[in-house]
Amino acid sequence: MPEAYHKLRTKRAPRPDGCPVDHAFSPFAVKYVADPYSELARRREDSPVFYSEELGYLVVTRMKDVAAVFTNPDVFSSENVQDPVLPICDAAAKVLSAADYDPIAVMSNRARPDHTRIRKYTQAGFSGRRIRALTPYVRERCEALVDGMLEAGAPCEFVSTIGHPLPGETIFRLLGFPREDDPRLQEWTTNRLAFTWGKATEEEQVDIAKKMLAYWRYCVSFVRHRHREPADDFTSELLAGHDANPDDLTYKEVESVVYGLSFAGHEIVSNFLGNSLVCLLSKRENWEALCADPGLIPNALEEVLRFNSPQTSWRRVVARDTEIAGYRVPAGTQVFLSLGSANHDESLYDDSGTFDIRRKNARTHISFGRGIHFCLGNRLAQMEARITMETLVRRVPSLRLVEDQVLDYFPNFTFRGPKELWLSW
Ligand code: HEM
Image 1 (cartoon, rainbow, N blue to C red):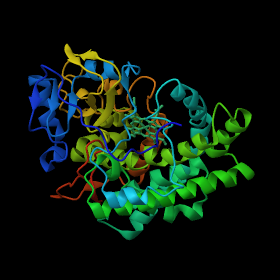
Image 2: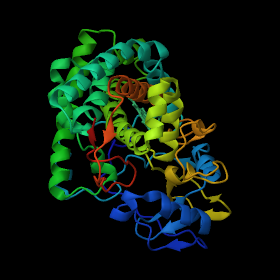
Image 3: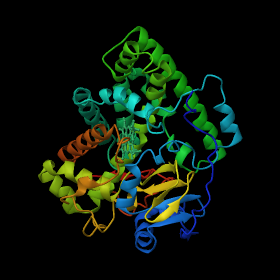
């Protein structure tokens, strides 16, 4: 039986011999979450690979080293990516000890050969046909949410009005969940990322754990329902795969994929939308260029993913003794891959600290990972962001950031986007 989806304690690995130690690197610090990039630039220059004393992780900052780790999955295993960065408190662990809470590792945290076997089925669910089928729904919902924003009048808080609801509803429709369940589904999937990658208080951890349990139970019952009454959705497609080959894709794997997808594809897209507006509205000429030529939007969004990614890091654990950038790294070492730093690597990007919507190689960013675990939802995320920006430039060309707002970010080791974003027009 593969290990449970969420381990509750993470092992701390010692510093690899000879590797520089950094006592100050702290991705939870207010200064770092407000602006990780200047701190990363300094480290990329001084010691591109170092051991973080605070985290107990080996930190990798250059594109070539990050890419080398991603593309060698048998040496750098992804089995730790869903482990909580900080230990989960006993009260939250107790909530998740419920006998029926038993999702298993299926995608990002599952190793080969099982990962390859399962991905064959999940990949089919992200086909061009399914993305195209969802597109009119995303457009319709985006128009309706913008209607609501305009009716309520300026100023508007974007994250709660559009940024959070739109990606949630999109993923719920992909999975086939009925629309009337949206309010409770949105509630259960809010603030989920803080549980594993953030610095949630004990009270928050218990609250999130209860929602995770409720959401798991919902997924289990929904999969049972769809097994009896299939429809044209991702869940039914997975179940058809299971029915055709029950030993190749187990029923528990279907339940666990359905459960994991909303976490993989919800808050990260909310952050992507928020970061996009921060970048695009900060300089009037960029927004005006998009209003004049919406054809620039896809490349501008690639540049957002490079310059201000919603996911600034990811993890691996070393499966057998190896080397990274010339340092000997023993099995068991936990590796922090700084995607944010790699995306600003000066050896690849001219003037890497400048946001340039016309940058020719913006697409070469590593925000969706690389190799066998490459983000399955990348086209979906880009479709949602493109539609949101197309709708806003067409309907609200005078959109601007409310002046003098200080953006606040969650203390989070991996995911980054503004908690609130105030807009006016
Ligand atoms: C801008 C938004 C997004 C970003 C930046 C992003 C980023 C990533 C990254 C870095 C990985 C890990 C790659 C690795 O371990 O090598 C990943 C994996 C994954 N993502 Fe995304 N993601 C986004 C949106 C989505 C959406 C919308 C969905 C689904 C609805 C999704 C589903 C997944 C899944 C299922 C995996 C695991 C794939 C596997 O292990 O084979 N992601 N994503």
